[in-house]
Amino acid sequence: MSGPTDPPSAAGTEQFSATQREVGDGAPGATAAFPYDRMTVERFRAAFPRARWRDDLGAWFVPGSRAERRLKAWSGREWSGVLAHADERGRDAFAFEPIESPYLEAADDIAVRTPYSRAVVAELRMVPWARWDPVSKAWRVPFRSLEDLRRHWPAIEDAARRAEPEERRKREASRRASADHADRLAEAAEGRRNRYPVPEDALPPLGRVLQTHAGCVVFEAVSGEVVDAAVATRFYPGVATGTLVWATRRRATHAELVRAWPARAAPDPDERARGWWQPTIEILREERRRAASIERAQATRRSRNHVTEAGVISDA
Image (cartoon, rainbow, N blue to C red):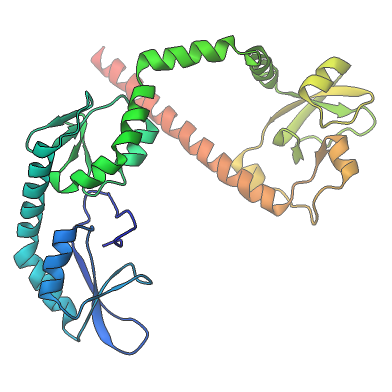
């Protein structure tokens, strides 16, 4: 198991695992891992009185050269009974003290249905044996995990309420009414122009990967149009004042980032004030990961669109 105080894995497939190993002191034995439950631990300790919990391993250690075989035999013989007993106790505990919520239904197990929320998913993944059921479109939690679910329920219910469409609309209306909403819209509009101010007397090389205050880009052309000082101050405060002209930019591709030659040192103040400089290897590595992720997502969307279009054509 993951430890009496640590949250066990909630992947939904973890039950009981046993692995023969040595722990560094020369004593043969095996480790046993299973989600924490007090009664399960008592039954396990009764079957293996020499077992000891090891924080460094995050598991129980059972000494003996045949420990793994003994553990697997015990799990095959006892584990289904352990789970059934834990479910029965959890069902009794729920009947005595139920979780009252519109997001929860109890029958053969506990079904949790909420509006989609990353926070809800994160919380439920920390509940042992919780799993997503695409048929019922609900998270299924066995009664043996009731106490874990109860600990996480306040956060789950709060996140679910925040994810309700009406609550989302209220937050969106509040965001639009905020003083900085217009500024965010203006910044987004400026970003879509795909331009960047560069000093008239220090033009960047075209077709090369360069780093700017807006990230790694490739400059394709310099228009020569003088940048309005107010625009430069508002959207590009990192670029030095003076005579600035507009340059057309685009995002660097993954292939270009891989081929880019890194700088030996971080940019000095003069280079940063100029607004463009050669990226370091650390920056290139991060930009490569980001570009690869974006390009994979774009390829997936194109593939899905192609399949959809092919299906429409075949139906026609």
